[in-house]
Picture: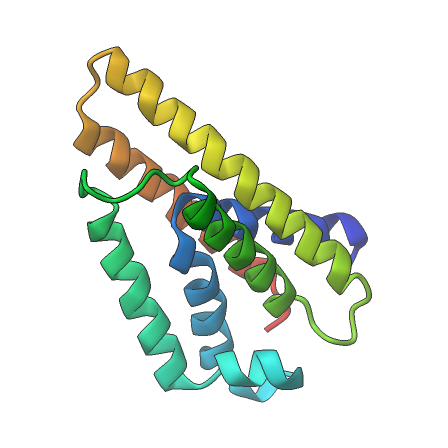
Length: 159
């Protein structure tokens, strides 16, 4: 795989995690579970189990609903932000075949994209809220954007 497409895949999956923590790893796991024979290395083989994919997907769907709850901490507070950054790095590494060089580069790209997407999505929601945009509509638009980023990131995987 070309270096630029490997980085693009990592950035897309990182951005997915920045918007919804569990979704990037769940998307990678689902892709690997569809083709477990193409999973290599411990991380990919672990994520390729159908039970793992179902569990991670359940977490991701739960997060889609929970994200709309006003009592949850902001995504840019240290702990939630660290989780998103870690999930972005994990998804990017998990999507990178062991034979492809640059897993550290993938982790860095995924982590940076997750952090950036967290802040950008938070800033956009705050700004649109001040402008009077319906929060449910803004959250739905973010969900659609996240799903498309995950779809594109997974499509760039070699599975």
